[in-house]
Length: 371
Image (cartoon, rainbow, N blue to C red; front, side, top):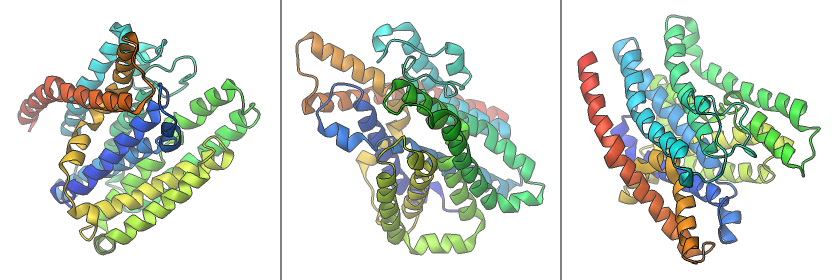
């Protein structure tokens, strides 16, 4: 399988795009100039790009470990995930639950739902929308918990050889789950009402079982890159073609998802977006692609800060705009966007040096003890 060091640049570009998409999408919830609505309306797909990246990277590490060692060290895997995810996340929870000024809205979900990573189920974004973006982290954590266990179960069986088919089935399952949710909960609701959107987010957008497309696509590519030499050759020799194909298909996905909560977009839109980003990811790891060959300090830094920025950006944007309004500055202009985004980067740097680096050192010591 292609080593991480060989594909770092391309994947960094994608991570940087993903976090920028998310920032533009969420910025629409604050005071903003008009162009943000048109540019940022499809920013929700940034989370889907993160899902594809996570599915590919995490599964790729596990498949490589299986190939090299014949098994998976659950202890090592979970220790790495714990120190990467939990310290920064719990610090953000501390900010939200102890500093009301940090909250971009008034009401939080119950603390136990955040701590158990189950907040994405029955999430009432209309009435309990504060730190609602943690829903995607809940899905990621559930994925980290289940995937290595699933692989350990499948490894001794013939089913492991059909992992690609299984991932396609998982994607199909999510489509079917969204169709069932639409017919049961959404179809009868008034599209112009807040109840419609509350139900749509609660039953289609946030639940894990309806949002497995991106993760499934990432695992599918990770599996094929590890176990199919023909797939690796195709990817290696057609990077720019894959990029062009992925962009075209993404454009089709945006067209279908223009009305995000329509039945067609709800059932098929997420899958098309996942496939599009999956193809673009294939371009990013292809030696023949410009994404693979091009190096950028900016995208590398944005990629490194993406998790911290994702956690903290809503609270930071809220505080910056409140501060500017207190001094009677305009907050719906382009200058404020620049100030807010710069503040998010500084927030990410704070997380890096105060939280992530110290806990990374602790992680290294723990890993040495269990090695």
